[in-house]
Image (cartoon, rainbow, N blue to C red; front, side, top):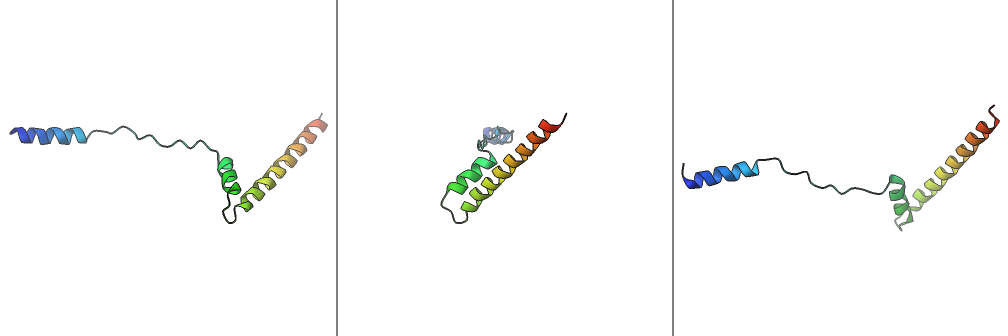
Length: 75
């Protein structure tokens, strides 16, 4: 084979191997944190997200109070 053919074959072989996995951006924010950021923004309708989170917090607190009251009365 001619040197040009060897060079082309070597180039193809070098390019056909597996590449290293690309580093993906690790999303460090939780869904609640992302929602809080959006809710605090000035986007139209974003205040609804903050209100929904407040309602969820209220429901969670109510459920926790109910659970603790139930556990306190259970012998």
